[in-house]
Image: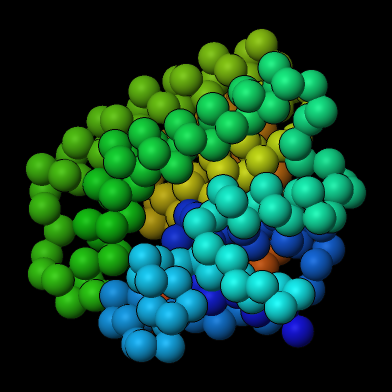
Length: 221
């Protein structure tokens, strides 16, 4: 059995979970308290990070590398375009969300509101929360600009770029930190992804002490 070591509200883990589910690859989910690393965990990934995927006798780490490995070994349905220019755009947008969006928004909102409490690291830093709440507006506007020109984020087909963005936004939606009224275009795009069968396991995630809002699992939000 394939096994994914993950944390429910990690956007990087969620990106891998979406990719696996879209490819209909069955996997056992094992929650990993990566902030309390065991020797066994560090043997699996000396970087001390999730996700870690054990698949076909391999132990894989780093979400983008994992997703592209899955894509190359299980090419259907296709999540990376064959055209070099569009492939570049997919990778650029994955990096945008996993680097820039993560630093400016996810780490400022999700990590301050949830991770600090779970990891017993104290109370949220209000300055970080305010900065994240301001920064997400810019990113939502950027998403809207992209989607005004394209059917999906990187072009005419759904790709890993859409999963990277949806992974981060779904974590923030879990704590009601996404203003879906800011852009009907972005909301419609997210609703399309949220309605996919591959998204179902994310909608039943529960983090003790942090119940999701009512709209979180509602496909007609």
